[in-house]
Length: 496
Image (cartoon, rainbow, N blue to C red; front, side, top):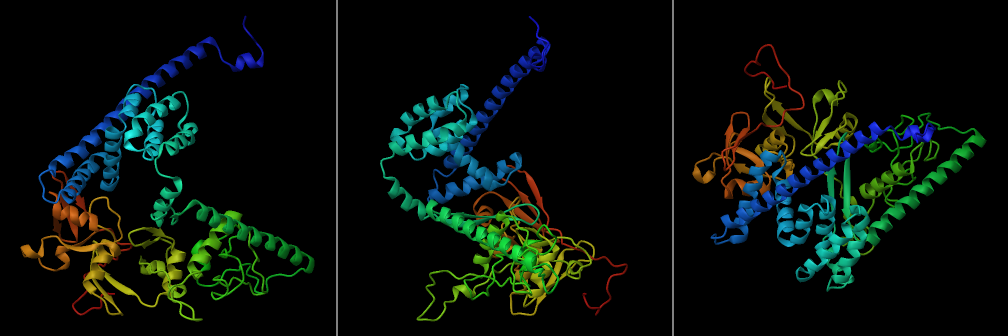
């Protein structure tokens, strides 16, 4: 019996059902092909790890030799997978761990009983289980995963692993807490994620305190707005902004278009570690329309940029310690036109990511010293560098030219790199700009302890050759701005 009501027509005709059935069948075939490709990739990467181990089997320093062999192989495969060698080395380690330590999981994955998401969960949680009990854990885990989505089984598998672990959770937590750290992950549009790995109770406490402080600010803002509406009071300066000079532009503008305050709480750097944000009429809330997320982020920034640690081992007696006086040190490359306000092009936070022109001008205005760079009028290559403070000019020049590690794909900032002789000094290579380049410690070792080779061309261009003969050209990072002239400057003419 054919239904003509709205529900029946919405379910589609028999032809639609047949078409959907065909799509499902095709999807099943695609899923099988993707699974087979992923399994093949994992086994290939695991084989790469075993090759590195076999290459170093006869070396006297086996551990270091294996690491160098693995780096060289990872760098070779990175060119094929279009990824960084660090990423490939991590994937090789993960693949080898999966193939060698989780055979039951691999077999279930190849048979189509579980999907890649299940494999990730089992491998992630299975590291808690002793090697001698891991096979039993795998069998239980695979049975739990069948027919369920990965996110649904994660916590259940974690509880199973915890019960199978021979050491107490408290003991393992104390050991894990020793690995606490803070790191920065660059993002788009001049933003970054500041990631702190902390004990859960500390992390939750920090988030709770920031939330409570943000709510207090927003509640006080509402009360101030209400009081202002009753008295008809306005900002004496008429600017509608409450941020302190020197820091307000670092976080952009609020919804009203005015510079947003940071913490939004009145006080000087010596008062609870907060920056003074009071407006001309004493209010901290004029023109403040920030959300609670924005206020949380601004309070977080205030406390870390201007606050002092509760425990300062440099403090003596009743005097303040030195930790509160320490300020961040960053290297920014910005064009003269941007500094003069002639354009709004981004500046370069060396080795990291672009930053907006307003922030660059703000930082430049507070800088105590400058470095002047002379670039080639056509190619823009850095030729000379001078400074008004004592320094190693050649080091500064190369940092300005390279800006980051010069190994293909690496973005480690030059300020954290090592100057390397392209032709080793022991082989007659001169200590000159034409024979020097910045390499991070990792890729400095790859150059010296693997079969990777490099030569330097004029202008700072590096040509890398991998052990299998693949060639990668690494040009010096382009300058932020380059000037051209109709005629070359005459002898004795100033460079700028």
